[in-house]
Length: 186
Length: 80
Ligand SMILES: [Zn+2]
Image (cartoon, rainbow over all chains, first blue to last red; front, side):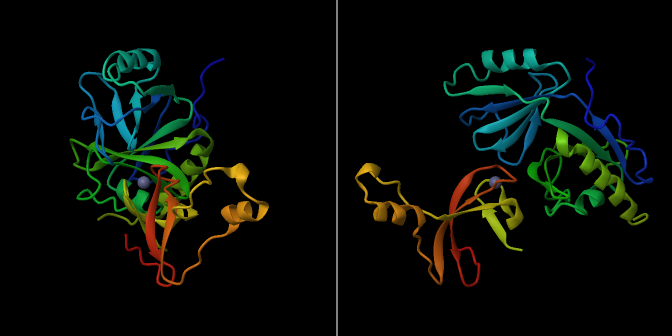
């Protein structure tokens, strides 16, 4: 059976001209439980690791990280984790949770304002800059929120929202609806 | 809305948390030796102070960790 993403049937284009919304489907997601070490990101931060190519290590808790990679990299990343940075640590586990969540990417001058309509965290770049992450709620939906980077051409933040598959269409509907409430211009 | 300081994530809305009741209620060393009344006391009886109270919270919508804090039951001020 062909793989089908949680938002395959949702039209994400109708967000006005200040926000772009897109699904980043089928990312590899591995839940890693291990003892804290300096090779893993600090609380509230994530890091894309040069060694592991596209693997992004997201802090989830004091002994828990989510390792996110490109689609289909489950086996390769698990092997690299187990033979590399987890080799010397005894109490560890790596669990494939790729099917649990899909990812939404938000960019554009209204992206921050749109998120702020449904999220109580201070998302201003001086607090929630590139490399910051949080588990919180967005429109009452549990999410993992990442401030990926500032867009090279516009300097505006690019966000990733990781949301459980069963909540994805609700959250997408809310984002589409709330994008109509964005104030025009700056 | 209360702001509850998670030791890992910092201050977050109370809606991200679940309440776990009084802190420091130890599991009986020898449960089989307890009378029904003593067992009921362990299960159901808790302090109910007017003022500072040590209690358990779980940051269930965030890092999912349990922690203990002291909250004033009159003012909701978190002091430790
Ligand atoms: Zn927390």
